[in-house]
Length: 328
Image (cartoon, rainbow, N blue to C red; front, side, top):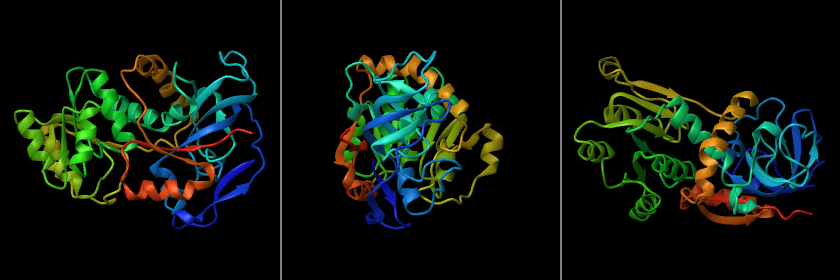
């Protein structure tokens, strides 16, 4: 099969087309003939040598795919050979065939193409796990999404809004802010020209927000803590702004705040399977009803994975970048 490999840690052009053996089917897994694969920030980190591949996972990048089940034991799963699915995977997505845990496969939402569905698993698993499970966003509570125009951001905005929450988001330009508001953000904040703490405090009558989804870390953390309402939760899922922060512990004590974080890739399949079940129950109906939609900025053929990574690193995009993999 054709695949994209990382020839050495480095810039986008270290991604090269190659030939690899089709993955073997192991117990609990299925083989998917890939039609499309999503690009995500962890793929960039892996390419630069900053996100180690978990033991036993493929060294081929790619954490989400959509395509046709062509092999595997499907007994009791409700799936059949030939079914179209999308799946969260530990690696191997940038290829014509990919192994996926059966419990992490989800049917394509009705009316959705494989190209659209390939943009769903990584961000929806991540947002549900961190905003609704770890962050415990409850009825009537408010959410601030840092990086609202990213793949994670557009997912978090739409999902929280569809479930009835007030949503704030930050982005790096007025154009991106308008895009966030078009997707459902009640107020988008240009972090280059506005102070998100001041804007949020003014919009909430001084209360602050209940949950913040943060992909920045670093110097953002003390300001985010100042932006939280009493009993608020700060959930950190990436460290684009740095791994070290000064934390005002007095505020955490006095106002009963929670600072937490997680990464999804190393978690066991059983943990992710619980998220898959909740997504199928709670989120897939919203996708099929059109209350939430995939936001795809640009697609590239598999051979142009390096160009897709360059676009990801430019941060010019709003939403997801997807590789098209023509099935053979």
